[in-house]
Every structure is written in C-alpha cells, then in structure tokens.
Image (cartoon, rainbow over all chains, first blue to last red; front, side, top):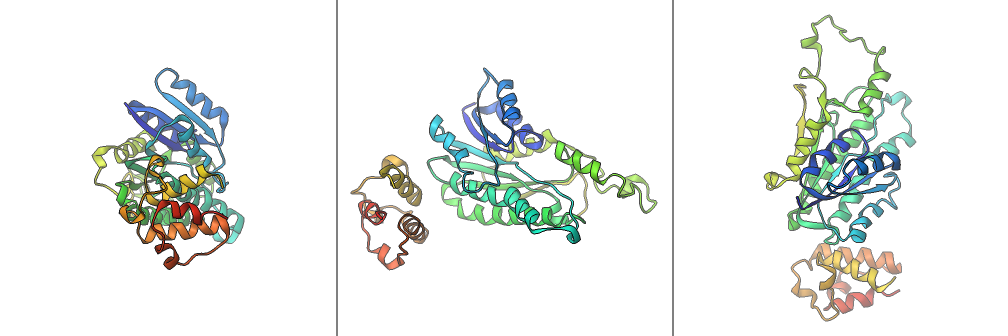
Length: 252
Length: 73
C-alpha cells in the first residue's frame, strides 16, 4: 500500500494488466488512454479499493501530453512509478510505407514517452528513487519483415531508455524497458487476423515445435505485468538502463 | 509568465521542492547548479523571452532572485 503510479495506455492489453498488478500496493493510480469509457470502466472496478484517476488523452498530441501529470498537482500526489504501455502496431512493408505513418509510429511508441519521462523527472511529479518502465518489443532486436517502422520506433525507445537511465541517476530514478515477444492482447489479435492467410503456418515442412519462433507460446499479459511490477519495485532498486527481453524461447 | 510558473521552472532546473525556491538562496550552494542547470536556464529564458543567453552570463548570477529577474520578458 501507499504507492502512487501512472500507467499510460491503461485501457487494454499490457497496460490494463499492469494496473491490475500494481493495484495491490497502490493508493493512487493515474490511468491514461484515449477511450474515456474504458478508463471509467477500470475506475469502477477498483471503487472502494484505491483511487483511480482517469485521464483521457491522445499521446500523439505532444504539446499537451503533460496534462497527464497535472493530475499529480491537482490530487497532491508524487509518483513512485510510471509505466508507458501506449503502443501502435502496424505491418507496412517498406514499399507501402509512408511518412505520416512513420511519424505517428515514432510519436506513439517513442517521443510521447520521452516527453512524459522528461517531466516525470521533476520533483513536482515524482519521488526520489521512482521507477520508469516502458513496454518495448523483442521486434526492436529481431527486425521482423513488414514491421520496419514499428521495429525502428521501439529500437529508438530502447536507446532513449539507456541514455535516460544515466541522466536520471542523481535522483535514483531508474529507467528500464520490457521487450516481450507475442503477447495475447487486443492489438496482437488484430495483427494475427491481418496476417493469417498471408503467411503459411509451416512453410518449410518442419514440425511446429521447430518452426514456431516462440516455442513457449503466446505470453499472457499478466506475465508481462508481473515483470513490470518487479522493475517498478525496490527489488529492482539497483537495476537501471536494462532491456529485459521476455522471448518465450524466441532465438534472436 | 506568472510568478508561480517561474517558481516551477526554477524548481525543475535546480531539482528542488517548490518551497525551497526563495529569492535569497545562493545558487552555488546547490550541488545541482551545474552545466545541465545552465543549459536549463538558457532553454527556459529563450522560451520565456526569446533571448538567447550565453553560459558566461548565466554563471555571473548569484541567487535565485537573479533567476527570477532574467526570466522577465
């Protein structure tokens, strides 16, 4: 109990699972996402257990993204941790890529995080020793076909994480990322639908066990949330600038 | 810019609490008054006033009161 957190991208998937995991030890959680309705549903779910403060926002609006942190001022709380789980997916081979798409991807998956983290570092919003965790992706290391912009945005995110970790040492603010392989989330399901039919399941005649890039199977979102909770906690008090891959057996 | 906004900017630059922002506090007494802080002042002043100060000018400042003054348009 007693902890204050911010979860961005909290309305579904990994972000929502993180709210659930962090709720055990939290007094206050600010949840941010686009959908006001989904946020309010989550708020209701925790009614009477802890304070949930929903902030509806579009993270691509970089000029106004820090309104999320204004909630700290209004409610007079200082954060122990921030989880950045807002993410945008997209399978666009280079041939059909375009500049608008590239910029959106960079904004959602990377720049919005950097802008928020910059302000999180202010003593007005965070406690000394606070922890920042971003959800990156194993694809930032494996560079999957058709996902150049996605992979690049997550690789850029990884790079920011490592520099930021060094710059934030003075306040003992730790900055880490989790890099999952395929996770069961609404975003991944959408992508699965799109790709099925395009890619043969067992293209080279190998048995599934050998051809499956992720032999341990799709990762449940709450498993990722547990790793996030670890990185947020004091148990990871000496861990910063790390990119924690959760690959489910993926060879990379 | 309101005085409250200036207090927030100065608190962020020096990595201190809002209550610690007092006119008479001596900049050299803060271990956070370093090259990054100087860059922070350059950035804040250019945003607030459009003036671009040189590091040498900022290093002449001695108190938080001086920071309030250079943030004036």
